[in-house]
Image (cartoon, rainbow, N blue to C red; front, side, top):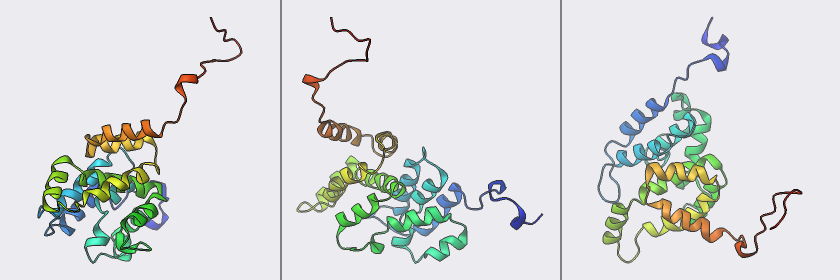
Amino acid sequence: MSDEQIPAQGRTPTFTVETAKVLAEVAHNRQKDKLKRPYRDHVLAVGDALADFDDEIRIAGYLHDIAEDTPMTRQALLEMGVPERSVDIIERVTNRLHSNPDDYQSGIREIAEDHDAALVKIADNAHNSLPERVEALAAKWPDKPPVTKYRDARPVLYAAVEVDEVRKILARANPWLLEEFDAQLDEADDTDYENLRYDTGPGFRSM
């Protein structure tokens, strides 16, 4: 029986999470981040932060910057075997493909329209917002540190996914953001606890 005759659900994926990790390392091998550190460390950390999600999201995590920072095209990725869903996520988080590439927050809103892309961007944002990195970026750009845009983007991205999904990513990528996230949830909670009723049903009787 040829590969074409094997049912899709019975085939072994040709492009795996491990393949994505290797491709990410090779594609970003010579690149440096804003602090002149190996960029591959960032893309690998973003992929690792998505370990609790399915393989196609994880693949997109490792490759989330490949369309932004390398000559790799959509067609090339598909021909390599990258799942179409993963490629769609990669394109959604690629700044130069947004309606207004010069408006960062507008791009964040476009990303937040897609659940899977928002998960990847949350992981990206979390790793970019590690305390040591925030401090270094603020020292390098004291007048307008890049981390400000990351902070402003978080509420928009968090609102696009489930609370537990945010917690899973932050716990892996940047646990220091969990306190900020909890504070945000408390601020958004408009429950009137002073007048909250605790009736449990027809059988409930107050004392």
